[in-house]
Image 1 (cartoon, rainbow, N blue to C red):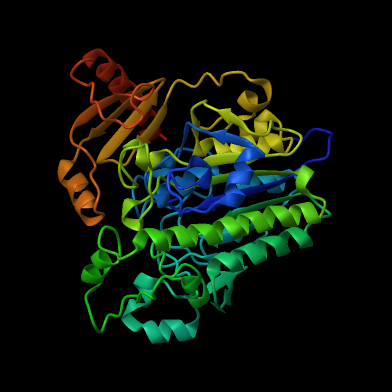
Image 2: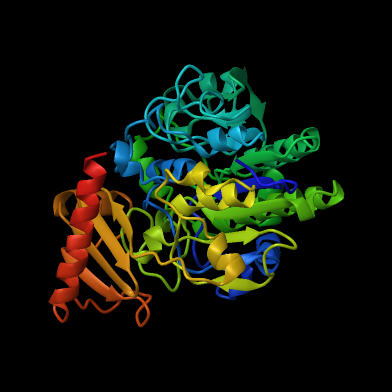
Length: 461
C-alpha cells in the first residue's frame, strides 16, 4: 500500500474555535500574538478557501477523523451518533501503513466516550492516547482530578474538571492543559523515532472559558482572575451569559492570552522536531475545528457570522500545511478545501496508494499543492438539519428550514444565524453583505437541487 521511499512522520494539530482574523500576520489586531503560527504559515501553504464540515465541533471532528461527511451516520448537530465500527478512521489507515499512532487532547465525537466504547481512541486505531472525553465538548484548562470533582460538586460537569484517561487508565493533572499537551506531544515524538508516527494533537484552546489561565500568565497580560461557575451562588445559565461575550469583561484579552500560549506550544513542537533531526521528514497540518466563536471572543474579520451559523464565519477555518522540501514555502492554495480532505491528504503524504483512501468523501490536496492542478471539485456541503449550505464555485447558498431552532441557538450563543434562503457571490462579497437570492433564482434552484441530491445520497448511506 506504500511506495518504496521513506515514509514521513505526520502530525495533525487541531485547535478549537480559532477566529479567522486572529493571526499577527494579518495585522488586524495588535494584541493578537501568534509568531509561531505565522512562521508555520510562512514555511508552508495557507489554504484560504478551507472549511470545516460543520459550524460546531462535535460533527466537524468526525469529518476530520474519517474523511467522510458525518451526516452519513446521522451526526448533524451536538450529540449525534457515534462513528460506526465499520468505518475506518485516519488512525486505522495509518496503522495499516505501519505507523505508530497517538492521540492527545480533547475528544468530542458524539455519544458516550469511555475506554470501553468504540469512540475511545485506542479502540479505533490509536496505539496511545491521553484524552478528555466526557462529559462533553468543554474541557477545563487547569483542573482535572478527583479532588477538583469533589470541590466543584454540582459544577463539575459544566466545568469538566474530571480526570483524563491515559490508554484507558485514569490520569489526574493539576496544571495548564495547553502546556501538558505540548509536553506530551514532544515526549511522543522523542519515543517514536524508529518507526514513522502519526500524531493527532487536539488542543481545547481557544474554546471557552479562556479566563482559566495560570496566575502567572494572568499577570503577564495584566488580567484579573475570573471565577468558574459556583452552583451554590448562581444558576448556570445566568453565570454562562455573564461569562461570554459581549458581557465578559476583557474577554477578548483572555482569548488573546490563551491563543498566545497555544501558539507557543505549536512553536515548541516544531522546534523539537528540528532538534531531533525530524523536521524535514514530517508533514504537519494545522486546522481549527470550526469558525471562530463570537461568544468565546474570537474574531472572523472579514467574514460574516460565527460558530453555530452557516455564514462564512461559522464554517471557513484557518488551515496550513507544512512539509519542508516538499511544499513551496509561503504559498497559498485557493482550491476549495475541507476537513474531509485532511485524511486523504495526509495519507497520500505518507505514501499510501489511492486505494487506501478511495472510500472517503474527501480528496487529497497534494494534487493542487505539488502539481498545481485544479481539484475539479464541484461543490462542498453542510447540513445541520435545521440549516444547510452549499458552495459551488463562487456561489454560496445557505438556507434555514427551522427558523425557531435557528433563533433559539442564536439567542443562546449571542449570534445571528440569518433568515430563510440567502445567496452570496463570495468572489465579490466575502463578507456576505449582499443577498442575491432575489436576483438569481436560477442559481438558487441549481444549488438547491445539488443539496437535495447530496442529501438523498447521504440519507441512503
